[in-house]
Amino acid sequence: MLQPWCAQVIDLTPANHDIQSPDIHIKEQWNTTQARYISTPKMTSWGRTLADELQYSTIKFKTRVAPLAQYDNSLAEKVDKKTELFDETGASLGHFDWVICTAPNGQTIELMAESGFAEQAKISKPKMLACYTLMLGWDNFDTLPKMLSAQAAPRWDVAYLNDSILDRIFVDHQKPARDDLLPSVTIHARNDWSEQHVDDDMETIKAQLLIAAKQALNWNDEHAPSQIDCHRWRYAATVSDSDKEALGILIDESHQWIVSGDWCGQGNIESCYQMAQQTVEAINKAK
Image (cartoon, rainbow, N blue to C red; front, side, top):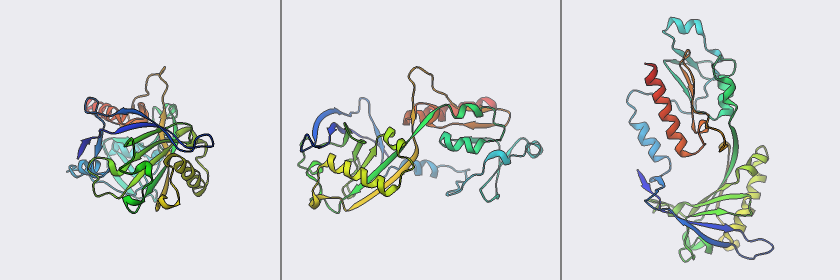
């Protein structure tokens, strides 16, 4: 379910008016000494497996929770301080001993607005940036650009981009346990560029990213991708300040509400685990 990902990482400067082909330099080889792990056979596989182990929980998909301003304190006292949550139609989602909100802080501000949450002012302190992601696919390996073919030298899995609106390229079909996957790549735009263009027309964004991707991967019409998709993550990265301590989870003990999430830390995958650990410790301490 989780496997080490020993990726070959390069620095890549795309082709431009000064250079006709991308400039590549070996950056590093990820190894098992300080391993990066990846979920297999899909990125969602690990989360789904964990969810399958939940014996006493009900997961509601595609449900928008209404702001906690609807929280009724007088009713809560009658049901032993439990919080009743509602969906956006006003239907009750049940009563809960604890409410843990892990949404990005922009959405958390809305969920907790006028609720009386004790740490409301701190939610807006971390700055979050957007990210556009471009996903490209090819029908078979024969149509791959030379940069991605099996004969490419050097053979690489992850590219860090220089002098581009793009930030990183991941070769998906070379990840562990992806043998049945058709050739494809995932490309992340720079967070600062994404934030500047967060409300732009999606087709315009896709066109700009595609131009940048073509400069990076250097394909011609014969080797152009056959599948193209673009996605916007409005809240993708937390701007970290090395001089300041991470926010940490926010707790309202009187209501038994917790605001958590990776953005309460450094905004990376490690922060997901750290904030989850703080959340569990806070609940256990309150028992």
